Length: 116
Length: 114
Image (cartoon, rainbow over all chains, first blue to last red; front, side, top):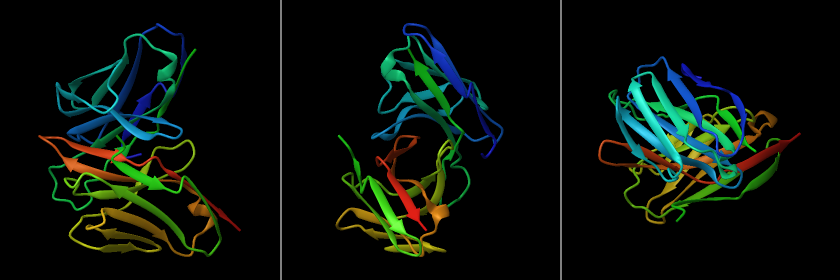
């Protein structure tokens, strides 16, 4: 999985509790992304980062915050989890400095989060 | 507003047949169109991608056909095999101010039956 790990891989939490998901990469890629995947919705971008401490919102950012203090780590925080945030969360990385036709985003293995 | 529309939602194809998945987009700023393949319990992985300056790209049994004027592109899987059974996502990328964001279709679940 292109040197990407996500932790935890599975988590069950209660409504109203804070949750932090971690994405760690060993590829030294500049860009990192958080997506959520829900049946019937495909993959939707939550937040992304284009460098250390440089982040921006995606399509479905409400209720989520992110931080990137090191190149290799991108954290996604649910300040107060709700049942609508039950989903599978994927981290992805890419690097645009190389001259490449594909500009591939590499995805991690995912974190399954259940909010009860 | 769904910027990339993908059809069908599900597809059943006989082994050896051709699988065809279609996508349509609205944003003319999109300049990169990848297809991702996802197996159950795994993250998506890039299958094949195309830029709008070509009308077709082929890699093995997988071909992307691109129609810029119609704002449509499709994935063709020739000689479909049971191992191709997966969910396929089309996507489109627009270069922003220092960012490169993918907008995904909702996915097509392909089942190839022996």
